[in-house]
Length: 420
Image 1: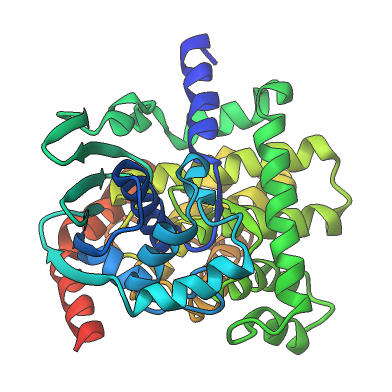
Image 2: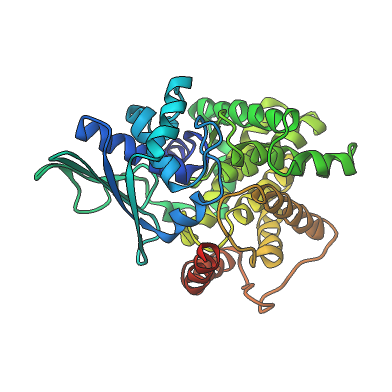
C-alpha cells in the first residue's frame, strides 16, 4: 500500500477510536454544557438549547452516567453544569462526587431550561446560558466534540466558519473495501497497537459488567441463556451485554467508532469472542479488528454519524467481516459478506438510544454472520435485487443514499412519534 494512503488509514483509526463514558449524545450535551459553564464562570440560572432532532431522539430514553439514574436532556445539561470537566471531552462526567450528584437533582428544579428543536441539522447543539447580567454560548456541529463557536457576553472567544474538526479529519473517501483488506493484511501492528488494545480492553470490561449486573433488558444474558455453548450466541451476547450496561448508565468507558459506543462495541466484541474460540493469535485478532473497524467506518461515511438508519447494521456487518477474516476469508469473501448483510438488514431504523439497542445489535450481528455463511455455502444476493448493485462499493453507496437522503422524512416521523 502506498505510504500516503497507509498513513491516512492509521490516522482514521486514531481519529475514530476515542474513549467515551455514557451514550455519546447526552455526553456531547454535557460537554457543551460544561464548556458553557466554564466560559460563563459560574453555574447558569437559565439555559436555552437549540438542538437537532437526532440529539433529542438519542437523549430521551437513556440514563446519563454518574447522575444517580437521571435521564433526558435537562439531566445531561445540568450534569455538565454542576460536575462536568470540559477538558475530559467525551469523558466529561467521569469524575463526579456524591455531593455533586445530589446537587444535580436540586439544580434540575432551579435552572430554567428551554429546548428549541432545529430541523435542518444532522448533529447540532447550541447552548446559551445566563447568570445575572453574564452570558455565554457554545455551539457544537457535525461531530460530537466539534466546537465551532464560543462567546462570553458580546465577546467572541472562538469561531470557525467551517466545522474545524470535520475539515481537519482525514478524508474518509479514501476508504474502499479492497484497500481496507490490503491495509489489514499489511499494517505494521505497532502503528495501531495502542488504539486497538484500548478498544479491546475497554469494550471487554463493559461487556463483562453487562453480564455481571442487572442492566437494561438483559439482552446479553437472555441470548446466552438460550444457547450457552454456541459461538454465534456468545458473539452476539458479548456485544449486547455491553450495550445493556451502557444504555442503562454504566459508568465504564467504551471506545467509540463513527461517534458511537454501541458501534464500537459491535465492531469489536464479536471478533474478540471468535478469536478466543478459534485460538487466534494476538496478531490475527488485531488485524481482524482493524478490518472490522474500517469496514464499519467506510459504510457509515455515506450514511452520516446520526440518521434514521440504525448504526448497528454497519457495525454488525463489520464484525462479520472481521470474523470471516479470522477464518481465512479472502477479499471476495469479505465483499460478499458485506453485500449479503446489507441486503438483509438495511431497513432497521434508529429510534434513539435505549435498552432495545442491545437487541438491535444482536440482530445486526446475526445478519452479518448469516451473510458470511451464505457465501460460504455458495449463495449470494445479486445485482438488481432491491437496493443491491453489482460491486460492493456500489451497494455501499446505495445504502448511504437510502440512509442520508431517503430516510430524512422517516427521521422526522420517528421524532414526531417519540415526542407526542
